[in-house]
Amino acid sequence: MGECDQIDPEELPFAQRPIVVLGAGIIGCATARQLLMKGFPVVLVAEYLPGDQNIYYASAWAGAAWHAAGGITPDQRYLQAVTHRVLLKMAQDDPESGVSIVNAREYLEQKPAPDSAIWGKTVVSKFREMNPDEYPSNFNCAWAYETLVTDPTRHMPYLGKQVTSLGGRFIRHRVESLQELYGMFPESRVFVNASGWGSKSLTDVRDDSCFPERGQNVFMTTDKCNTLYFRNGKEYTYVIPRPLSKGVVLGGVKQQDNLSPEVDMDIAQDEIARAHRLAPEIVPEHPAADSISHIIGIRPSRKGGFRLDSERKGNRIVLSAYGFGGGGYAFSYGVADAVVKMVETTERENVI
Figure 1 (cartoon, rainbow, N blue to C red):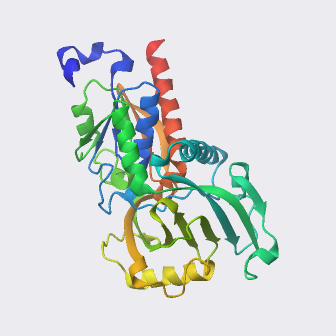
Figure 2: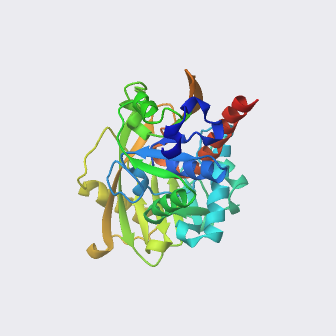
Figure 3: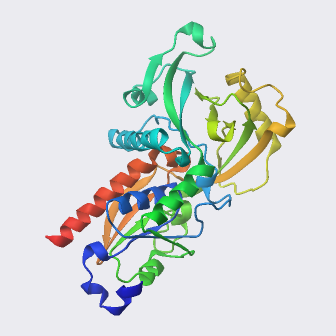
């Protein structure tokens, strides 16, 4: 803490007290970046950091496509819209970010409900309803548009560099409670809990709505990696392009409370079969063995949806931003923007 150790922490101006972020996945790192760009000092404390390959570090393994979520509130839609705006700028200006603009085809098994993902047409480019002769007859309707995909193998190291270059600090440390974090930073007044499903085990949070959700995907190398395919319905399936890594991610599957690091070949074969049915022009029925690898990550999910709020605990403010499951990348920078606004509200209350 340097100079801060030499004075009474209570005498520090608000703007000189580090904002402490617990968790360094996509939510924690995006939040840190946005805070730093606004001039706030930031320290991130986490068990896993950008560049790590542990299956519990879900941000390293995500499919990471921007797709409008159905069944969410207008405020939550706005979080996704902000994320799209930030990612689009990265795709246009910064190849190192790992964000790419791709074509998308979304096939729906049933007529879309009023609260479906159709709202995404207000955000994405080149949206149109496809003609019946453009998609298989077993679907009710289909949409085509441009969307964004993020390559986590590039984006997380990129974010780590950005946070560091903006003056942020990473500390690799596992904490068992928020109280422990307060003790590490007695001068700080604002803490961001972006610990994912770790909030289930933090002794002074104990959010039992949080749970781990195992995802397993197939990565297939191919030159045909510029179009995303998404099947919306009972046979939930996606083919997510990774242009910068010359391949596609095939999925998906969700397994609650399953923490196995072992590849389940039955799941892998089923994902290939479903992807072939969805996009036979990209995914052959029997891909070459040397074109296939496997991705496993434990998603930080939460019953009832993610938590994003602010609460006062004594003389501290704790902002919670966790439980995004497989939607972390699609909500990331919008959530970061919301957290920044909450921090600015706290700043205002401390200077007037």
